[in-house]
Length: 104
Image (cartoon, rainbow, N blue to C red; front, side, top):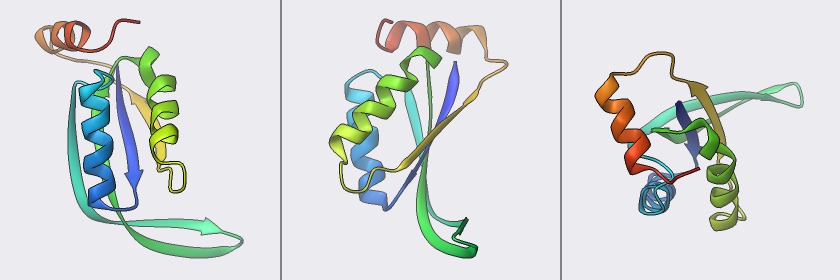
């Protein structure tokens, strides 16, 4: 199991992504956090931007499919996508995640 992080350009993009991923059973659930400050180093300069963060749980084997699907839907402004392993999860949550997400 992994916790997927998707850093989106806007809240509307985040909502669209969540709709696609949940409808296609690629993600079990999602949280959307609005107006986070995103900073990065680019060409030696620090940039700051407001972003929307989506976090959701899924199977690790679905990550590549999620990343590809997001890039298909959002070709011009594909968000940053990465995942972190979930080390511990309640047994009932694990069973639900396995049952409700796409079979791999």
